[in-house]
Amino acid sequence: EIPAGLLAPNALPTLWTGDEITAKTAADFFNGAKVVQVDKGGYQEPMRIPKASNDVVFAAIAQAVQAGQLWLLSGPASLLAETIPPGILNDAARLRPPPPAVLPADILPANLPTAWKDGNTTALSIATALSQKQGATLPWKTVRDVVQAGLSARFLELADGSGPWPCDYPAAQTVKLKVPAQQPQQGGGGQTIYDASNKLLVGD
Image (tube, rainbow, N blue to C red; front, side):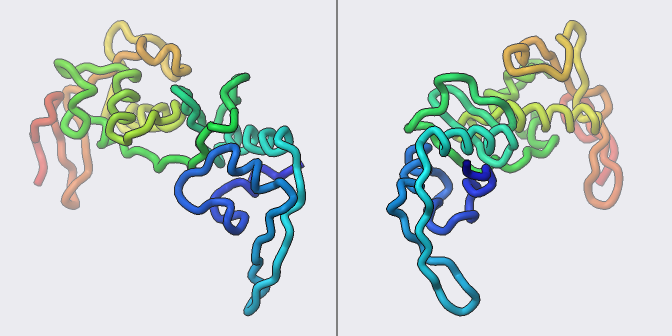
């Protein structure tokens, strides 16, 4: 067994050499031949990484993804803080640190215009536009969190005819969103209010 946290960036020396590794890289790291230098407070000491089977490494990856410690990309799949479906985790699957949180203001029409049409959007459109901006398919958790933050902060509201929220990714296209008629935002030390088209009404 491998504790899932050991697969996170910076947990084990030389496992991560950049911002992304493959599942095969992680498996090869535990082939029994890997020796790393461990800092012992002023000097380096070699340590051999114990051997573990691919199944054990992949189980640790699955646990790390489910715990939100790793972001997994495999084909069209983009998973974080959820169970990996069968067949998704393979040698070519890519592992990354979780993406940074998106701010609610970043999904408003002025900052994410491709997601909006006539002042309306859907959770799926926001997910698609954010992924295009990121250059990689964002996990649903990241999109769900920012939509929820936008609703809680009253930057967004559910439009008439919307499906239920919160929801899983397959229902994202049914969640209809709009900008409230008057939208409070903080800026310049005072309150700023925008209308639905993001036109400044009150503020600095």
